[in-house]
Picture 1 (cartoon, one colour):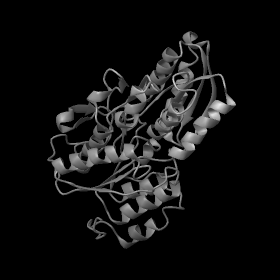
Picture 2 (cartoon, helix red, strand yellow):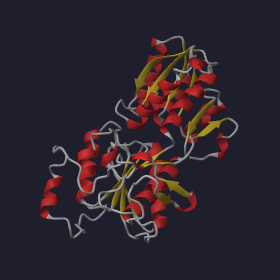
Picture 3 (cartoon, one colour):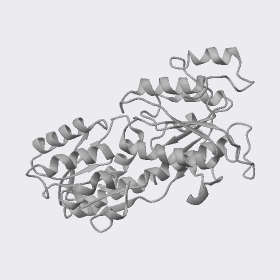
Picture 4 (tube, one colour):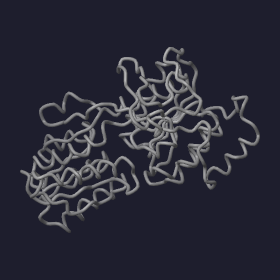
Length: 362
């Protein structure tokens, strides 16, 4: 645990008291909030980046995933922990055990604000629910990075995106269409209905399906497993019972695709109903090798966490502010450019299949 001592001299009793109101009060844009929509400025009001500023040491950075003990976030946050160690700063992880406990996430943000961490990296369960609490954190000088799943842009400094959202969404439809021969019914098995990243990807999936080449591909349902293995397993079973002609399933969630693969591999649908989406090689290896899954995608979650850590330290060091066009130096990972609305893309996802999956261990 970080020490709850109030290290910043500028934190007054009034500011401390206001934390208790953060969960219920409607937070307006503060002087330290980020404006990413004014011609790509994206910087905290009055703040200017100094890319040559020294990297601060001893910073306290907290990772707040959507769900602790989720294998995906475990890998991502360990990547962040390793990067912070290399940067000379301190790591901590905290968060709810359920991927749908939005109020729990709000409470953790408020606690971290009270503890006066230097920066926090948050994967948001809901785009708007955390905003009041995050704006309070920024008002108190805490830098806010979102990763994996974003908030509204004015509620954080930068967002570390797994890859271009459009590319992820469209590529998953391209994958499933190819696997079913561009003909048949498909379904989407998502996480929570409020998950920002899932909904953005699904929007692009639906848009991709409007293209002429998919005229014989029909999306019949979007189901939600809430990033819970048992619920995702049951939702897969329900989809196949409700749609006996289903040709394929797209699951853009690591928990969902693994649960769906588990169900398919032990059913009469193995090798008949195609499954793709976003999964980790370690989770999906056995299902690729036994013929349940032909191919799926993902980025390296450890690199996602590492980039979030580099962004948090760079923000706290004054090297970036979140303005469009700024560059973020991330050690051996290279240099990244801040895009519109403070978004930093990790890069293109990797397609995993029987030919390459044994080369990856995460």
